[in-house]
Length: 308
Image (cartoon, rainbow, N blue to C red; front, side, top):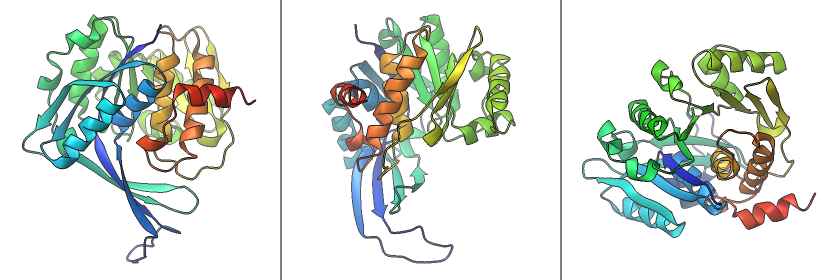
């Protein structure tokens, strides 16, 4: 039976500038080419969940502009329910300017627009999609107050909440009380806890930090090293990453989150298997260009896993 995943988050149109190397401060360089694609952390995560077989719903906002129409169609084309995506008449659709170098590394500048203008009114009437949902995912490209209001509703419906604290900001303390799973990378984890990630002991100490604040499950993404998980009952360990040649790392983390939610048991009892699947999906994403266009389907992920 497929999972039901609800994503509250950002919707952006990504414009990518392809360069040999990043410019130095004050330097002007030429881009080899320019491309645009649908993106935004929230939208990418929703597409990743949907392409891996989850029944997916989206809560968010776009502007009343051509980019907003474009993004709504992109979500619908991926079989994502957009009944709770509002059209903001006063703010433009979110956008991101991505600089991508020859090694596949990127720098990203984001204009929040309608994403940052979201208010708690947006989540007042989402009970219809939370009724039998498995997971509610949110990130930090939209206001934390909105996420908190949504997570409170989710817990009233016994929905497991996943917080992807990216880009990292100071967290509203109450939000952690309603978070079941938190998924920072190592730098985000250090910023949020004050504990530098250097070894397993520091990762377990970070898990204790979050557990003391109400978060039961910590998943730290470690890039090419893999993912470290720490769950209740002294269940912890490292799931190694798949080694591939990356051409564009945009949406790698988002693919990981969405694919993970499509496979994960509500009690995280299958966390290692789900992490292997999610990392395989992410490894396929970095081998393609663009955010949303490079996110793989379940068939592609399963075929890649079978290649071992």
